[in-house]
Amino acid sequence: MLGGLTNGNQQPAITVNHLTMAYGSFVLMRDLNFMINHGDIFIIMGGSGSGKSTLLRNLIGLNEPAGGEIFYGDQNFTKAGLAKRQEVLTGVGVLFQSGALWSSMTLMENVGLPLEEYTDLNPDQIREIASLKLALVGLKGFEDYYPSEISGGMQKRAGLARAMALDPEIFFLTSLRRDSIRSARACSTI
Amino acid sequence: MDIKAALNQFSFDHRDDSTLVVRLSGAWRLGGEPSSAFLADCERQLSAQIRVVAFKASELISWDSSVIVFVVQLSGLCYRHGIHMDRGGLPPGVRRLLALAEAVPEKKGARKEAAKATFLEHVGHTAIGAGDSLGEMLKFLGEMAVTFFRLVRLRVRFRAVDLFLLVQQCGAQALPIVTLISFLVGVILAFVGAVQLKQFGAQIYVADLVGIAIVHEMGAMMTGIIMAGRTGAAFAAQIGTMKVTQEIDAFTTMGFSPPEFLVLPRVIALIFMMPLLCVYSDFVGVLGGATVAVEMLDLSWTTYIGETLKAISLTDLFGGVFKSSVYGVLIALSGCLRGIQCGNSSSAVGDAATSAVVTGIVAIVGACGVFAVVFYVLGI
Image: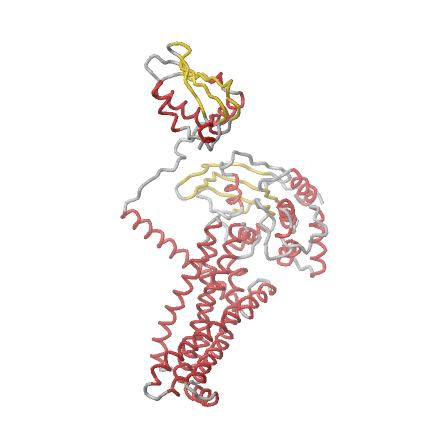
């Protein structure tokens, strides 16, 4: 996260209150409570099938919690409307399990799309920033490749570059490897 | 047969009255006699005095999973008879694999019950499924309505590049198949008509028959059905795959609404391309009819074209073109709906594509019926 900007802020970045996650009538986890502070690296570990990814999907609103609430800062994310949620999510970078790059776009367009959408930068500036983000994950020179033309590991790194596109304060990384953590840390200190 | 017989050999030894020794020898391979066949032999050896089953593997040359399966099955048998199994005589590798297989106990309740649903249960599940599916469809249509409203107010976001690519895919690239099918439909209509009309010496009315049928109905309908099979299926497969690879999730979390970003450009592309394809299809269909008339009925090109122009009006043409545009919306919506409903596997993508074509064609035929009534009432 951007240390310099938010150091004075003592409020936890994410608060989870009595969260219950379920698929239909099958309850996966009940009454989950935790807090994540600014600057924390918070690791969720568990055996396969224990609900790590489901928790993440609940945190970013892809699944609706069966009970309980999620707060980003003092904003109640669970009760927020669509517009408010999108506003919160622009401050969140998500790296999906296999990268989830948009396959019809080049890496440059993948990283550039959020910038196009949420900033007033002109195309040249966007290209420059996207190039930088790709360089941060070691993919300089691959800007005009399509996701299908690079390897799985590279796709995952490009996914990370896209997650960092808007310099988010919060990163969610799934099934990470050491190099992803390193790049994310490096990015969060700029 | 000989080779198979030489595999998976074992014999029994009695060390003392209470111990049965199973001697494994030769090579054990999965291709040999299945171990389940041996169990009956083993069970016969288990007399009342036997308290321990042991192994001797000094003559075992090589082994694979067949030994493990055999020992596991034998172990179950011993357990049922209350007999102790001494695995000391087995090769260390076999013992390690057995330990690994037994390290995690079977999860209670995880095994799927081979439940046999009754007929009524099937009916019930199907009904509930249909209800859910209807709900999803209405939700999707609602989202699309909201998106259209935003389109009218010019508050939508999608990439112009995507739209142009889609226009190309469902416009120019569809021309060859539309040409072929439309021409053949024209030929078939003219041929069927010619055989009948010739009996009355009314050959010239083949032009009216083909012209009205094609321009009024068949041009739009055939283009619709071609595009449902070609483009509707492609939309469902594209969006379904994007769902499987979590690309849709990525759009959602980054604040791009999938109906707006993915569905809307597809709908727009088809709304604009379908009328063009329809006009083209009308033209080629009439041409197909003319070919038959000129070849079979000895009519001249000019007579045929003149008669066609007399038979059809601009209202007919615009009616057909308007219909094709509506069919375009139906094709795009059913393709995208099935894509968005797609499950999380490769077979689900296939189902989505199939279902998109079926939904698209049903919607087209349904709409065609509605149009027929409405046009009749309006006197068009």
